[in-house]
Each structure stands twice: as C-alpha cells, then as structure tokens.
Image 1: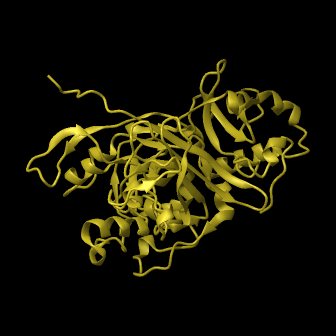
Image 2: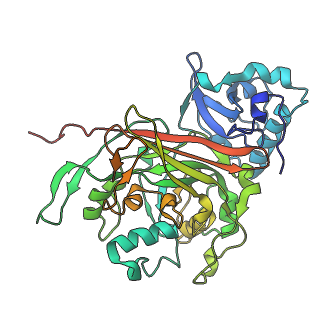
Length: 418
C-alpha cells in the first residue's frame, strides 16, 4: 500500500511515525487544554473533542470524545471504528475541502503532554515468544528441558495488575521485596538487585465477550496495539514464582506507549506465525497471518549520558499471535472487557542482539554487556532510562508507535524500618 498524501506536509515525511496511513489515537493536554482525545498526524495532534463539538466528527447519537480516554469509541465496535478512520482520512487527505475547518483544531505535538490513552480494565501477560522462553528455560533447567511440556500447545499467561500500567515517560521506582540468595537459608527484605525490562507488544481488546471466542472472532475484537515494557524484578521473581508464577516481581509497573496504533493501520503488514512443531488444538489453530512485521528496538541510557541500542528484533518472532492469546483466554468462559490489555510476552529473536530482556542479554548476569559509554550492565542501575521504539516499514512511509520510555529511580528508604 502506498503513502496516502496529506495536506499537512509533516505527515508526508518518510521519517514521521504518523503519516495519514497511521492515524493512531491518544490522550493529550497542553497549558491551556485539559486532557482530551487526539489523533496523531505528522507533528500535530487533531483535537477530537473539538472536532466532535463542532460537528465535524458525528458518528453516533451519543458523544464519543467528552472523556479523556478511547474506551467509549471502542465500545461502538468495528463498524464505527472503520467509519471514524474513513472520516479522518477524508478530512486530512491532500485536496480535502475541509482543510480550513481542521487547521484550527491541530495542536503541535511539541506543546502537548501525553497521558494514558485508555482505561485499562484488566491486564494479562503472556510468555509466548519461543526464543525468550528457550533462553530463560535453558538458563534455569538446561537446553533439554528449556520449554515446559505445555509450551508448544498453549499460550502460557498470568493475570497481572491493571493498576500499575503507566504511560510512557512515567518514572519507575526500584521495588523492595523478599530476596533469597543460594548461600542463605532464609530470605531478606531488600531492594531488587536484578531489576529488568521486557520488550513486548500490548494488544487492546475493543469488544466485550462473555464466552469462548474463535481465533477469527478474537482478531476482530482487537482494537489496536501499543509498545509495552513489563518491568521485572528477577530476584524477587526467583524466590516467589513457585508454584503459582510471577506476583510482586511484575507488580511494580508496566509501561505502554501513548499512541494506540489501530489494527486497520497494521493490516498491510500482517505475517504468519512460525511453522508449528506440534499441531495446535482447533480452538487456537492458525487461520491466517495474524502477526505483524514490526521492527523493534530498545535503548539503554545511563543517567545524563547517550543511550546505547541494546536490542533490535521484530514482532514477527512471536510464536502465538494476540488473537490466539485472546481466543485461549476466553475458552473457560472468562468474560473479556473493553480495555483489557494483553502483553505479548518478551519478544526475542534467534541471535544475541535480538534478545528482549537484560536477563537474556547478560545471560542471567554472567555475561555483562558493554554500553557505548564504556560502562557495563547486567541489570538496570538507578538513573538508567530504557526506551522502546517500533515501526512497520511501508513503501516510502512507516507506521510508527512513537516511544515507550521510563527511567529507574532509586528505591525508597525501607518503608518498614522501625
């Protein structure tokens, strides 16, 4: 699909994340505007609240953009999603007769503060990248037992904390927790010493359900995608995870990028899941290409210093698609809500530079990596900033996500000290 030209010049640059082909959705504010819904176009944001108030956007009998989140639009379903995308495209296309109406509603992105783009109903994180699962399993169980027996049959996941999902730019505080080293008989309550990042994609559920979904129905129910960093305290996790899996180790924070890139914008970049080693059961069998060719990078910057690119991989490396994850999630009859967030699981490729976590990059801390500054890292140090970026590359344009960034603050003083 070629670039759709816009009358806004910045949207036609091959370097922008937000051409007219993209039109991602977010929430923004300025010094004079309260938080409100906006659509990104080039280096500007279209004020959706004003566009609706002036009757330029008029899709339903009830207002969709009075409140600063996109859940109200999601609840309308795919027909309205498509109608909005078509309307925005018509308004912003080169030669549009509505240019004069829209120009006053554009806000420079440089003047805006970005907020959470939707209300997160529930958060489920998966463990669905084969290279990541193999690397982690090899570290702890050896290569012969790297994947648990169920891994090739189901997308393994756990229910996380929606309350700790935060928008890009939010600082992250190093957590306290129970740590137990091999040379001690009992744990100690200490700040995490092996704090990590995880490169993931997040799928946003846009349609509620109250029963099992097929893979195709699940794909239809997904509204869009964000970058996702599921911060992880590896040492807390090592002590707590048996037998029920991650708990406090993953509860500190999960960062997402501020722009929801719609499934419609990503459709031209669909790719198939990997060839199956074991045939999947019918309820999660592949029905077509449901992954996406999205280049992903991670940079790590020590405080006050230039960042180093530590990872470069692609979303197509996942073993299970978001649609398969959602379909599997629904099989028990589990109700799914508008605004549910599904984390893909760490995205790693087959080579070392493609690993999506410091746990893998430093091989459990045994192989420190050297940054461009000359410093070394096994896990994150206070003051480090981690930034995720990603885009799908089209012919002369790209569908970008912006960035998902966060800086690590030192742990608080012991909150239980007497």
